[in-house]
Amino acid sequence: MNKLETLNNKILSLPEIIKLIQVWKFQDKKIVFTNGCFDLLHLGHIDYLAQAASLGNKLIIGLNTDASVSRIKGPARPITDQQSRASLIAALFFVDAVVLFDEPTPADLISAIKPDILVKGADYTIAQIVGAETVLSNGGEVKTIPLIEGYSTTAIEKKIRSQQ
Image (cartoon, rainbow, N blue to C red; front, side, top):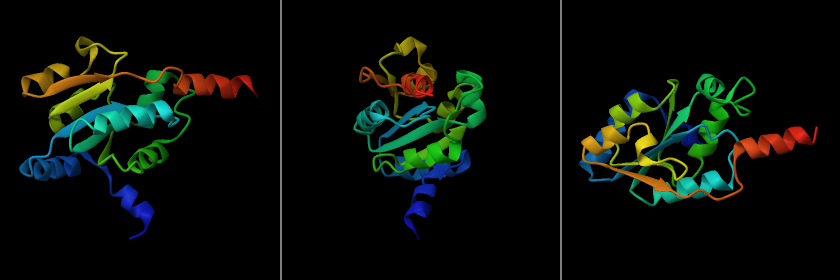
């Protein structure tokens, strides 16, 4: 198996991730979940995801599909297609699985996965985090992680467009 195939094996469908979660839960692994567009991967993303991974044993990323990103961010986004974004996220050694979702929010995905810990950036309050009630009602935790100032895909996009 080549290295790219190994990465692609971390990009799973919902039924595939559900089966894997059953194994991890049997092994008493603490499952962490976060989600996002991760359009242009930057240091802020890496720091955030590494901190999220350190909260448990297995990190699952819910990744917005291209159509979902366009609905949220506008017709000029995503800049990078979903397969590329999924592969880049899967390439991070501390990411265990990537699951694409097309809905406006990851609420259904969170309900299906039932993570032990749900994580978002500290730009959200716990009350604003989609899926927080679900995770808390299942005995899980919801945590926020401080973001590194000055790093955002929107800022990178503006910088690129201003230099054209």
